[in-house]
Image (tube, rainbow, N blue to C red; front, side, top):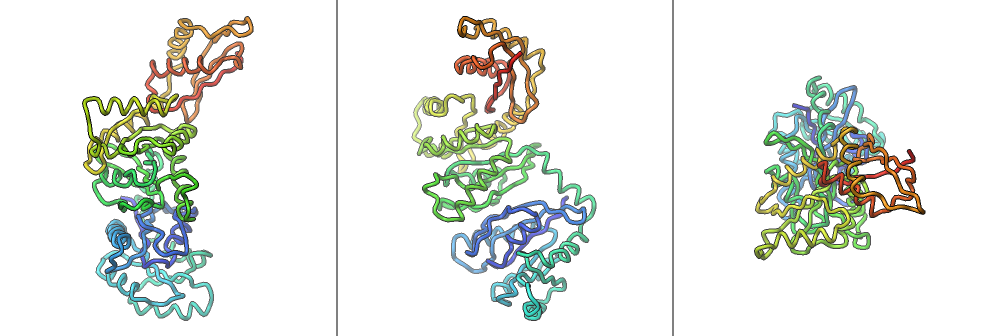
Length: 437
């Protein structure tokens, strides 16, 4: 098993700042308001050649009735269970608070190594004041400033001393796995789908739009299938985004799209496909991502004999010209057809990696060109002599011909359809290039 470290503590002590520093990237959203982080965030850090997972958690507030603070508390306790070592973070500027005492109380009961991290120690006076934290009764005390990075080295030395070589090498295997991003507008059920798939409360779900803020990575390894699932914040139109926080969430969601191989675009069955859904769809196509359309909340629709067929026909009219996309009707709440969604995702992932042998490609495509010739331009017939697949991330094909600039869009569409009919490229955007022989 890989080695995992969780950063825990009350709100606003600088957990996400330390998390970003350990990962050497700005992965978690940081803001002065308390309670920005809600779900558990994962990342991989390395120090002195040792790799380990880091979990960032929301601020721990015991006995609170606030809907989010209650859910965050659950997430923190799950993180404590998952981790091999715990970084308990406190704030030198405010001293010991009741919330710190409550957190310390939880941690005294665990047998796992706890490192008490006193943050915001950025001058000599603070260092003297910070000695009061010895009163919490933990042996391993570290004084640091997560914003400037002073003191983080000693902490990392202590953590990496606990990690074996095997644990370190296991941490890195995640990078080679397929990545699926769950994208869509706020409140279509993205987090509910993630929780339904992995069978535990991985992300906080509520009726309030914008509950998820960070992009959440989850390693899925069940039923002989293994991949990374990325839950993202809902993407709204620019005019609707008011908080800075949400602005960052949307940027993260779009970056998650870049990272993913396949995007699961979730739609609300009751509301239908909106202009914003079409924007998200065309953004994924532009980025060359595999796409699976999931129509969620299908259990809430009144159905007739051909409801699904008519709904699908209407959807395809809206997303044209790229209609070779799998469409599934699911219910994340009732867990209907959610595993079919994963199988379809894996198929689309395979389609995206597909390489067609040049001989086979020419045999099929030149026959199709023979059957339906390109139109004559300025009295010259266009002759396509040869086709090959290019070594790119998105399946791309080069057609070599005498007048590459004169091949018109309708004929390009015909060639793309032939490629789709003869080779399995469902759910994957194709790129066609025409070059001089």
